[in-house]
Image (cartoon, rainbow, N blue to C red; front, side, top):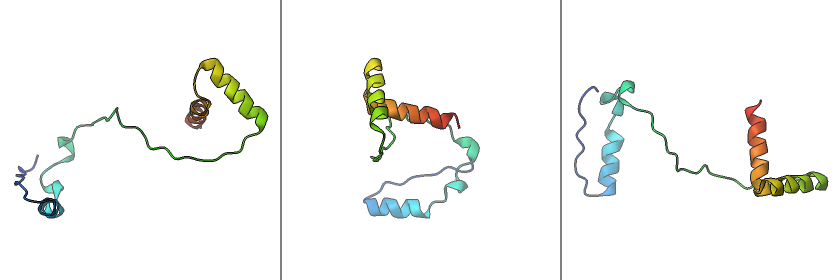
Length: 87
């Protein structure tokens, strides 16, 4: 740590924003001061897509999902994830 950062009490959000806009954090912290942090409860954002599949593939996917007792869309996501990991 380079020097101590004293944070004042703020009377408004605007005052706080003005303070943080002026502060250069590299004057107070070094890379070694930071610790890795995990946020295990955050859900990644999802985006809906539309995809056309041949009927026989969709039927087989639904059968396989039923065998594994998972929603078929979750199974599709797992397959895509597995496929991308193997690239």
